[in-house]
Length: 114
Length: 108
Image 1 (spheres, each protein chain N blue to C red):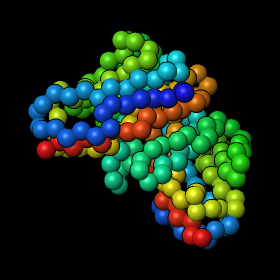
Image 2: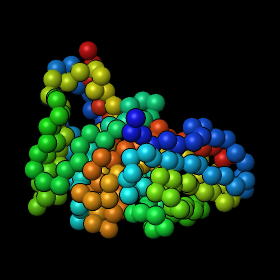
Image 3: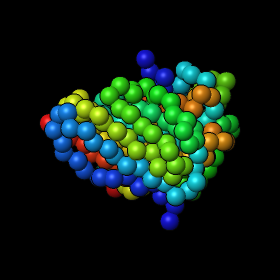
Image 4: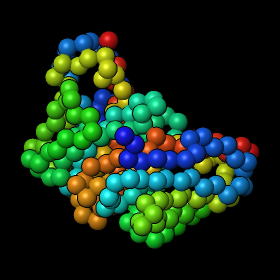
């Protein structure tokens, strides 16, 4: 089944404790991206990647890191999480050409930083 | 700054009604997406448009590139259409910008 898999689905952590949220896709998509969704603000793009070893900042990259060492994986790293990073996070992927045809989202990761 | 504006924010309809959700954007785009998010959070891509009109079942999406405007129509609405509908645009530089969503409730 074609899908984007995020892990974990739920995570509660403490301020300053490094964490990684994993994202993997099995559709051979070039484009992958991370978003956060907050009440009243909607979805905002954190980082995106056009292909292996190519990453770019989105609207709200501060406090986050990403890497794209393999085409299928695009982990989101919070080196020192803070309470303002409490949010619902989505990973998504698509083909790069044709404007993002076949855009597929993961199921989301609800992160709470205390 | 709001690159993407949606209206209305909230919409309640009776089952069977024709529904329209509007999206206006201020940036250049390579494509526009309509997304659906059900309670529980999962997001599904309904349409990707770069011109004209697309139809899938009871859903129709249109885009007017010159006016920077898109509409999502639902014909013969049903309670299972109740969800948040989100307009998203992909810039030529491959960044995504999102509207804040339209919360639709369809009453039986």
